[in-house]
Length: 206
Image (cartoon, helix red, strand yellow):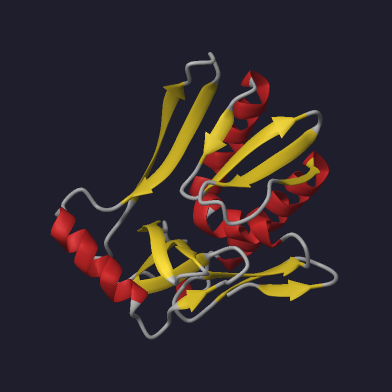
């Protein structure tokens, strides 16, 4: 699902309107985080940048769809909420460079005809809530949600269809998977040892 490179980080979209990432070898958890938590939506990325600023200023952790990110001793710490990798530490400068590059890519791709939405495209939502821990720390929970009109049964049927879709993708290193149903991307995490999905959620389209 993720290509590895020895040099620069690259972004593209595939024919299913999904973000594809070529990531520097050793930094694949960042690719997973970008795909499942940050997501390839320009307005969402701007809001996420503000959330990162809030988290850094307040010493908060952001728990996304699949990852936890926090600032610690001048570094960024990225953890998997599903135990898919050991905590990854990298510089704040790298974080800024990656998000700036993604923002430029999304801005330049806005007119790409491949990204045109079909009529009646199901629109997921994104919401941030705050959770206080017993130790007094705060977690900012940033999740995407399926359309409110969908019943639990509709969500399950659509997720099963995405898992079995012809354009299904997966990454054995990070445990990320992606599939589509009726034009909507479903992404999630699975256990590479068992092949069993652990979580799924909608991806907000470009």
